[in-house]
Image 1: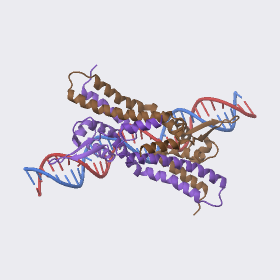
Image 2: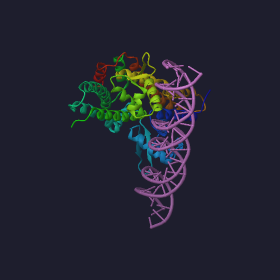
Image 3: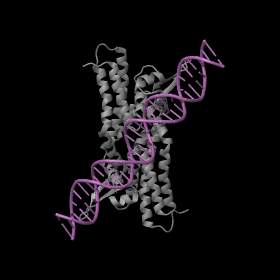
Image 4: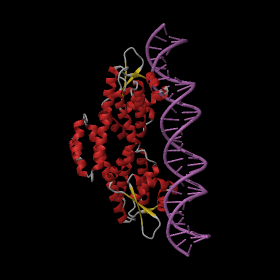
Length: 176
Length: 176
DNA sequence: TATTATGTTTAGTAACTACTAAACATTCAA
DNA sequence: TTGAATGTTTAGTAGTTACTAAACATAATA
């Protein structure tokens, strides 16, 4: 059984669309990344429109999202008004970039609200059931510790120059 | 400034709702977990309805989702028809459970489609541009390697008896 | 300046999600 | 067997999301 390359590529694009959707991104994002990832040369917006089947508007916004995540890079050529896009092929680099992006947004503010709860619990005095206060303090503190651990890991990964296979191997060793 | 405990709790519930939403779960899921997490005793479905402000139907489905993720445990008491729910307080345990759950579903099938692409590319013969085939093989192989690394990490974590602070500290050391 | 090539923004829409309200199912007890 | 307590499922809905089509903006060229 031997399939033609275009069909195989199409299959890959659909696969990444699903993965993209699974991770909470629009499907178009995955499709566009897949198209770029399978292209040996950077693609223009119009070429992406053609290859992904989306409209210009969609490609325009999706490709910008990808660029913000560090998964694609935009470049321009001298004497050519078009923008060109190419896929980041170092996934570890991309992970760091995504972690950095996620760090900012509302994730921080959400986590901060847990810390605020903790501080309020510590500040509150009088007219409250002291046993309950203690119980709540313990629980919220435990959650806070957990978030801090996640945060540490995330920051540590972000700080790495390169998260290569050897690092992964080392981590795997620790996890036995 | 001293707030009453109920208000502080409410604030916490809202915070976890946001976090829940951020991670791609319904807000109700976060709210219900928060209510259970702040309760020293297991709560019944009706108590959860009262504390979360959701309807029975919503609580019924959300709490089941939480149970499937291993974030809450359902129990029943002798001579009492009600079900009771309590929060898992070991977050590392919960992570393992979530990873296990995620492993199953369509994530696998999505990743599998990348592997299929790889296999097809290896199988294809004749009537294809050999240079392009080689290029595609390289790229798809690299992505596959990345997924495999993620998968290894995920499985390693799932396999641990307990992912305590000491393990996290060790990983942090590696990441320098 | 008018024309063309490119990218962005906007208005509208179809599909989806998380929920509510209420019907339904099940189990226990009288 | 009926009735009450509990939990689940279903039908409908409001809000959201990811997209399309098309208007718009910008800049280069004639």
